[in-house]
Amino acid sequence: MMDYPDDADGAALRRIATRCDMSKPMDIDFVVSVPDQAAGAELARLAAKRGYTPSLEFDDEAEEWICYCAKRMVPTYEAVVAAQRELDELGAEVGGYSDGWGTFGG
Image (cartoon, rainbow, N blue to C red):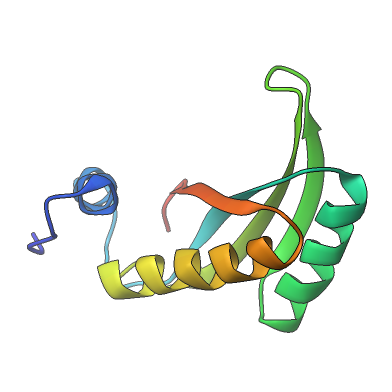
Protein backbone atom coordinates (compact mmCIF):
# COMPACT_ATOMS: atom_id res chain seq x y z
CA MET A 1 0.00 0.00 0.00
CA MET A 2 1.12 3.55 -0.69
CA ASP A 3 2.55 5.61 2.12
CA TYR A 4 0.26 8.62 2.62
CA PRO A 5 0.76 11.63 4.91
CA ASP A 6 -0.79 11.50 8.37
CA ASP A 7 -3.73 13.84 7.74
CA ALA A 8 -7.42 13.56 6.79
CA ASP A 9 -6.71 13.16 3.07
CA GLY A 10 -4.05 10.54 3.71
CA ALA A 11 -6.41 8.63 6.02
CA ALA A 12 -9.18 8.70 3.41
CA LEU A 13 -6.82 7.48 0.68
CA ARG A 14 -5.60 4.64 2.93
CA ARG A 15 -9.22 3.53 3.46
CA ILE A 16 -9.91 3.63 -0.28
CA ALA A 17 -6.67 1.73 -1.02
CA THR A 18 -7.93 -1.26 1.00
CA ARG A 19 -10.64 -1.87 -1.60
CA CYS A 20 -9.51 -0.19 -4.84
CA ASP A 21 -6.64 -0.20 -7.32
CA MET A 22 -5.10 3.20 -6.66
CA SER A 23 -3.23 3.20 -9.97
CA LYS A 24 -6.46 3.41 -11.97
CA PRO A 25 -8.59 6.52 -12.54
CA MET A 26 -11.77 6.85 -10.50
CA ASP A 27 -14.51 9.45 -10.18
CA ILE A 28 -13.90 11.70 -7.18
CA ASP A 29 -16.59 14.07 -5.94
CA PHE A 30 -15.25 17.25 -4.36
CA VAL A 31 -17.67 19.19 -2.16
CA VAL A 32 -17.76 22.99 -2.25
CA SER A 33 -20.11 24.83 0.13
CA VAL A 34 -21.53 28.01 -1.38
CA PRO A 35 -23.63 30.79 0.19
CA ASP A 36 -26.57 30.62 -2.23
CA GLN A 37 -27.87 29.22 -5.51
CA ALA A 38 -26.46 32.06 -7.64
CA ALA A 39 -22.98 31.58 -6.17
CA GLY A 40 -23.28 27.85 -6.78
CA ALA A 41 -24.27 28.38 -10.40
CA GLU A 42 -21.25 30.65 -10.92
CA LEU A 43 -18.95 28.14 -9.23
CA ALA A 44 -20.37 25.36 -11.42
CA ARG A 45 -19.56 27.45 -14.50
CA LEU A 46 -16.00 28.11 -13.29
CA ALA A 47 -15.41 24.48 -12.29
CA ALA A 48 -16.67 23.17 -15.64
CA LYS A 49 -14.04 25.32 -17.38
CA ARG A 50 -11.40 23.52 -15.29
CA GLY A 51 -12.57 20.04 -16.31
CA TYR A 52 -14.93 19.22 -13.44
CA THR A 53 -18.47 17.93 -13.87
CA PRO A 54 -20.46 20.10 -11.44
CA SER A 55 -23.89 19.57 -9.92
CA LEU A 56 -25.60 21.99 -7.58
CA GLU A 57 -27.89 20.83 -4.77
CA PHE A 58 -29.54 22.27 -1.70
CA ASP A 59 -28.75 20.18 1.37
CA ASP A 60 -32.00 20.24 3.37
CA GLU A 61 -30.37 18.78 6.47
CA ALA A 62 -27.49 21.27 6.63
CA GLU A 63 -29.63 24.02 5.07
CA GLU A 64 -26.90 25.07 2.65
CA TRP A 65 -26.07 24.98 -1.04
CA ILE A 66 -23.46 22.46 -2.15
CA CYS A 67 -21.71 22.32 -5.50
CA TYR A 68 -20.39 18.82 -6.15
CA CYS A 69 -17.46 18.91 -8.57
CA ALA A 70 -16.67 15.48 -9.98
CA LYS A 71 -13.44 14.65 -11.75
CA ARG A 72 -12.08 11.36 -13.09
CA MET A 73 -8.50 11.06 -11.91
CA VAL A 74 -5.86 8.72 -10.52
CA PRO A 75 -6.30 9.26 -6.76
CA THR A 76 -2.83 10.33 -5.74
CA TYR A 77 -2.43 12.41 -2.60
CA GLU A 78 -0.95 15.25 -4.65
CA ALA A 79 -3.83 15.23 -7.16
CA VAL A 80 -6.52 15.23 -4.46
CA VAL A 81 -4.86 18.04 -2.50
CA ALA A 82 -4.29 20.08 -5.69
CA ALA A 83 -7.95 19.70 -6.73
CA GLN A 84 -9.14 20.82 -3.29
CA ARG A 85 -6.82 23.83 -3.41
CA GLU A 86 -8.07 24.73 -6.91
CA LEU A 87 -11.71 24.43 -5.86
CA ASP A 88 -11.06 26.37 -2.66
CA GLU A 89 -9.64 29.21 -4.77
CA LEU A 90 -12.60 29.08 -7.17
CA GLY A 91 -15.01 28.85 -4.25
CA ALA A 92 -13.46 31.92 -2.61
CA GLU A 93 -14.37 33.92 -5.74
CA VAL A 94 -18.07 33.33 -4.96
CA GLY A 95 -17.93 33.25 -1.15
CA GLY A 96 -17.62 29.48 -0.86
CA TYR A 97 -15.03 26.97 0.30
CA SER A 98 -13.87 23.42 -0.38
CA ASP A 99 -15.46 21.08 2.16
CA GLY A 100 -14.09 17.60 1.52
CA TRP A 101 -14.33 14.85 -1.04
CA GLY A 102 -15.37 11.27 -1.55
CA THR A 103 -15.43 8.43 -4.05
CA PHE A 104 -17.07 5.08 -4.61
CA GLY A 105 -13.79 3.91 -6.14
CA GLY A 106 -12.93 2.63 -9.58
